Length: 126
Image (cartoon, rainbow, N blue to C red; front, top):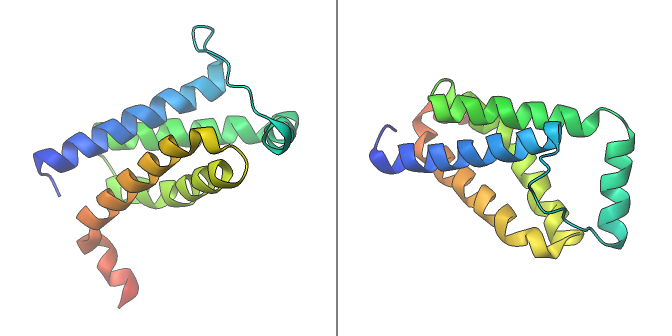
C-alpha cells in the first residue's frame, strides 16, 4: 500500500483532482475555456444553472484530492471518488468524447489504487 508506485499514482491523482476541483470553484483565467457542443453544453449549463451542483462537485474533488495528496483516509477517499470517476467517464463517453482520454486516466488511476488497497475493502465483500 505504501510503495513508491502507489505514492506516485496517489499523488498524481490527488493533484489532478485538486486542480480540476479548484478550477470549478474559482474559474482560473489562465485556463483555456473548453467549448462543449450540443448535449454536453446543455448538460453542463443545467448543472451550472442549478447554482450549487458544480460547487459541490468541486468541493468533493478538492477534499478527495487533499486526502490523496496528504495520504490520510486514502481508502475512504477512493470510495468517494469511485462514483465521481464513473460519472466523468460516462459524461465524456456519451457527451464529450474529446475529453475521454482524461476520463480514462482518472478511472485507471482510481482502479489501480483500489486494487492496491483491496485488503482494506475485502471485509466488505465477505
